[in-house]
Image 1 (tube, helix red, strand yellow):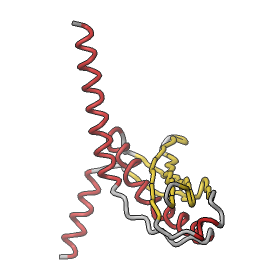
Image 2: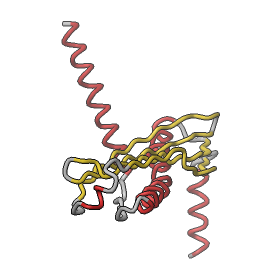
Image 3: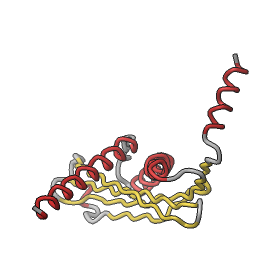
Amino acid sequence: MAEEQTTEATEGAAEQPGQQFAMQRIYLKDLSFEAPMGAEAFRKQWKPQVNQELNTKTNKIEDGLYEVVLTLTITVKLEEETAFLVEVHQAGLFGIQGIEGQQLAQVLNTVCPNILFPYAREAIDNVITKGSFPALMLPPINFDALFAQAIAQAKQKAEAEAESGDATVN
């Protein structure tokens, strides 16, 4: 049975000749922490309002080498005042060969951010704790769903622009 599984795995790899994906390096590109309330934040009852913003950016360094930067911005408010703000730019270099088009876009926008997210979450947790605030456990993010949503929005926008263009021509 183990031989059958090995054979099937080998055949599956043969269907995708020349495709390679390798994580080269993960690094913290930028980290910012602000606590504008200062000591006043510690004197108020801790009922935070947490806002999370997420962004990814991809740079092609050279053929087959991409830098992906996952940016997470966390803003925590007490009532209407900002208790603290953390922004992390967690980056990675990824070697990708033999993957192109829509499949490459999906790898860069789902697989790479999935790899980077735990590192970004750890950096955020560390800096918040060093700022003497309670730990903040960020929930997992479904990058596949976000990518599918972005594709659907882009398609809707293109269709709307095409319809408005047709209306202008008539």
